[in-house]
Length: 539
Image (tube, rainbow, N blue to C red):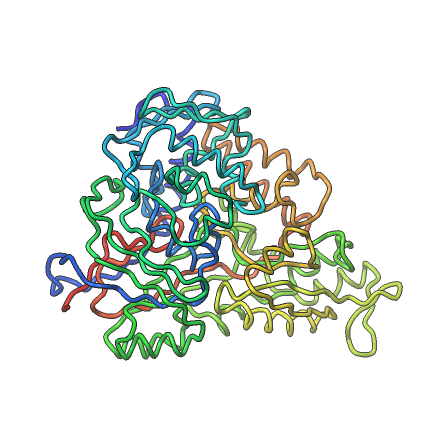
C-alpha cells in the first residue's frame, strides 16, 4: 500500500525502528481460549494514577493523559509495536521526496469527525497549522515534530502535501503520534485553553461523553467507526460501549478497587501489588517505554551545576540497580544511556553509568569540592547543594528521588526535593526556574533527543550551542540512510552525557493491573494503551 518513491528517504524511520522495537515487544491482557470470541458491549472502569492535564491530544504529555486522549483521535499513520513499521491509518498511502522535505499523504475516503464533518486535506493542514500556532510551550512534542514546517497544501480533497524548509526524516514516525492526531475544525479553531475542556472533535473510535478536570473522563464508542489502523486486530467499531476513567492517586486504593471489582484496570501497579492482583485472578501487564528514560535535566546556569565536573560526578554517584531493586521491581531496568534501550538508535553506555562512588568523589576532589563538617562539599564558600523539580506524573518518582538523595549524600552532594503539581512543573520548566528537573519523555524514535536537548528547542539546560551535539541532532534529520542516522543518534547520546545535560536513573515501564474479565488491552508503539480491541468477558 505504501508507494515505492517514499523509500528513498523514509526507510530510515521504519527500518531503524523495526530493528529496536522487535526486540522489545509488548504485552496485552488476554484471557486465553476459555474467554471465547470477542463480545461487544460493556463499560470498562479504569483507575488513573494521576489526573489528565488536558483533553487535547496535541497538548498531551503524560502517560495518564495520553491513555485518555489517544482514544478520541486518529493519526495519519500508525506504528506497529512489534516491528516498528509505519502502517496506514487515515492515510492509506504516502510518498516522501528524496530530500525528506515533502511528504504527500493520500487520505482514506468516507472518514468523518465526531461532529459529522468529513476528513479532508484541509483538516490535516488546519491540524498542523494549529499545533504551530499554539506554540512550543503548549505543544512541546508536536511543535518539535513539525520543526522547519513550511505548510500543508490541499492538492485535492483527499491529498495533503506537507512541506518543510529542511530535511525532516523523523516526520513519518511523528505522523503516527497522538500529538499530531488529526482533529476537526471545531477544535483546531479554538485557543489552547478552550481545547482542554473535553469537547474535542476527532475521528477516533471513542468520543468524550463527560470530562471533569482533575477527577474523571468518560469516553463513549463512536457509532459507525470503520477506518481503523492497519495495526488494529479488527475493523469496524470498538467493542467497548464506554470507558470510565477515574483518578485514584493512592496505589493501595487502586489495587484494592481492582481486587474488589470496583475497577477493571489500573495504572502504575507496583511490585508489592502484583501478588494481590494475581491472587484475585488478575494480572499485571507491562511494556518498556522507548524514548528518554527518567533522569535529571541540569540547568547549567544555576548554582554548583555550572561546574561541568559536578555534572560528571553525578553520573557514577547513582546506584541505578538499587533504584530498580528497591523501589520498582523486575519489569523495570536501570537507565544505561540518554535513550531507553527499546528506542531506535540506542547505544549502551552502562559501563560509563556504572555505580562507582569512589570515582564520583575523585572527580569532586580534583575539581576542588571538599567535604564540610556535615559531609556536604563546598568550594569557594558555595555549598554543593541543588534542588530537583518533579511531579508525581509517575507514582514511583518521590521514592526514587528519596533514594537518590541518600546516594548522593554519600559522595558529599545535597539534593533537595521540590515536589509540585504537573501544571506548576511545566510552568517552571518553561521559564527555567529550577536547578534540575526530573522527568522522562516517551517516543519510539531517536529524534526524541532533539526534542529534549536541542539548543534551538525548549533548551531546558539553558545552555549555549555545543557543536558536537547540536550538529548531529540537526544532521540526523536529513540522514536518509538508516546506518548513518543511527550513528548520529548514538553520537548524540554520548554528547549529552559528555556535557552532563542528562543524569539518567531508570527506564520507565508501564505496569497495568487488569482484572480477569479484561481481554486484549494492548500497548501501542509508544507504550500507551490502545482500547480499540479491548473487550470484557463474563459480563
